[in-house]
Length: 414
Image 1: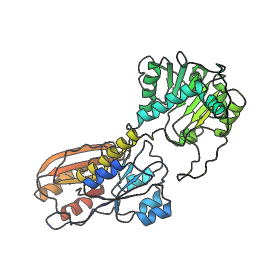
Image 2: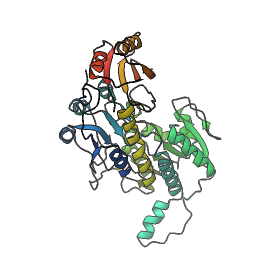
Image 3: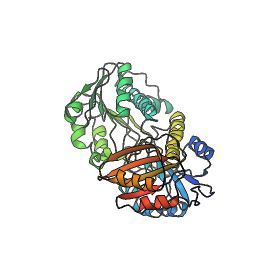
C-alpha cells in the first residue's frame, strides 16, 4: 500500500503543515506564482538534478516539476514517499518511468498543447532560412565577403512539405505552411484526418519521394529510435531539406552528415540531439557542427516566453487540481477523471474488476456518508473514481477502503 496523505485529526481535518514543491530546470515563474498562491513553499533550481541529488532534495516534497533533462526512474520514485504528483513542464514524458509512477499511484501531467505554436514558428522560420540559404549568406557577410547571388536560393511557395507525425504540432505546421503557399503531405501511423489541402501518404517512402522539405514531429517511444538513417536519407529527393524538432534519437546524425557532406541533401535544421548537455554553458559535441546550410539550435523550439509562461500555469494548475480535488484530467498514466471542486473528496485507484463500486459505496454507507457526486474512469487494468460526500471523511473510513482487496491506492485530497 502506498504512503497515505498527511495525518488527519479524528474529525477529518488535515493537520497544519506547509506543503512543498520542487521545480527544476528553470521552469517559468508563472508556475511558482500559481503554487505559492495555493500555499506551497516552492524551491526552484535552474538545472536538472542527478539521481543522487534528487534523493537528497525530494524528502518532504509533495509536487515535483521537471522538463526534459531530468530522468525520473524507479530508484528515485521509490525514495520519494511524500511525492503526490509529478509535472513534466514540456510535451514529452519519456524521461519518466511511467510504469513505476502508475504502480505508486502518482499521476504524471504534461503540457501537450501549450508550446505547439512556438515549435511551429521555429520550424517555418528554419524552412525559409534553409531554402534561401540564409545561413551561408550570414556566415559570409560576417567574414566580410559580399555574395549577392541567387545560387541555391528558393522560394518556399509551391514547394512540398512532408510532415512525419501529424499530431498537435504537425497539424498546426500544415496549416501555417499552406498559408504561405506550400503543398503539404503527411504520414502518421495513427488514422488522423487531413487539415486543409494536406494529403495523407500511405507510407513513409512515398512521402520521402514527394517532399522537398521533411519535418519530423514524432514522439519518444522506443520504436522511433533511429527512424531516419541512411536508407531514409537515400529515399529523399536530391537537394531536399530535413528539419527535426521532435526527439534527438530519431535521427542518425552520422548518416545525416554523410548525406549533407556528399551533396545529396541541401541542408538541415536540428533542435534536438541524441546526447545533449545537461547544464547551461556545458560543451556541445556533434558531427554536424561546421556543415554549410545546417542550423543547430539548443533544444529551444518550445522556449519562447509565451510558451513557457503558459506551460507554467497550465501544468501547475493540473497538479493543484489533483491535490485538491483528485482530478486526473490529462494525466498521461492514470484514468482521466475531471472533477468539480468539493470540500469532502475521497479518491480511489483500483484494479479494474467487477464489484469495486459496490464495495466502495458499502463502506461509505456504513460510515453514514451520503454521496453527492461520483466520477469514474477505467483504462486497461486500472480504474479511478473520485467520490464527493456530504461530510468530512474520517481516516478510519479511508483505511477501510484502502484495505479492500481491489484497492491500489486511496487518498483524501486537500
